Image (cartoon, rainbow, N blue to C red):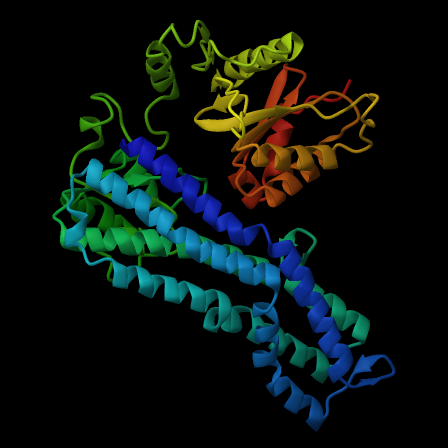
Length: 482
């Protein structure tokens, strides 16, 4: 496993784990709000449609925290998501173990890591079910209730205020979503950080490899680490170059070279700091760097393309965009029209978006799933909603359901990505809505590609869904319907 493969797989697993929680937030928000309304109806006194304060009300509010916290923890979807989240964390630990043993040749058995992992998992559970959820969400909600009661707010106004607090309103998200999203991100970072901290304490690593992208609000120390140091940080670089910059910008006191992946370069930093025995160039390629974008996409594409055996991939073509398509000799050709459409779409994606598109070997063994493509390492299926009626299908009226349903079908067929053809009867808001539901309902799907008649392609990553940037990215490649 190379550094690039490790970083890509770690990012994929972390995002998948985060989405275990994030995908159920809308349902949890609604349940939490409905439970609050029921509690208000049963517990609070009203006069002329407004809340009133009394000694009994104060006593009831004093018992609110424990009761409401229990209500949240008993939501079936929430309880199941937290359990799944925790169960998936060892998968991340296994990837770190595989990489460190095979690439850095460390003796994993020398490291007593299990107590550390258990401690971190226990803290994560506390964040989701007890102290963290109580402090960050339940208690502020109780305080808001108290303010509304003391002010004698009308029930209608109070309900709106409380709904905005829980679910959000306008362009702002609710308190519950902000807390659960932030906690899911912090939890996976804490887990990997604790494992890497233990590695640094046990073995003498000369470098850490800094990976991750820069954004417009990136702090100076992150920009310096990625752009100037190219992601290769020695202990001397850390002490003499990075630390003096970082100490001026949201620095976490007590951060050292050994605990860098746990503390990070500042509060809220999402970069990875992988302990490394070797410079990346020793394993990736003499002239390649680990900077903001990693090795150039064209370099990878050309090397991968040139290594394809003609005996397996007799049809292939490389484009100046750096993308290519290749057709396996045992690709599914039973339906000539469908096969031709798959090839034409593969060509267009490779040429227009610079992606590496394989039309895969088709297995005829019973029970074997056969996604048609592999796109930049992700198994992918191509779906075409019924935009015209057929004897066994009605034409869709809104593109929302076809996108979400076909995304779910693709996941069930073993895919991690899906290409969805659109031709008629859609608009950009419907596309956005369908993609949102697709990512929500199919947590294993990492990428949805909207194909506008093989002319333009909108490549939407799960991270865009998490960050609420689907529409922003759709606009860049949107092509109107016929």
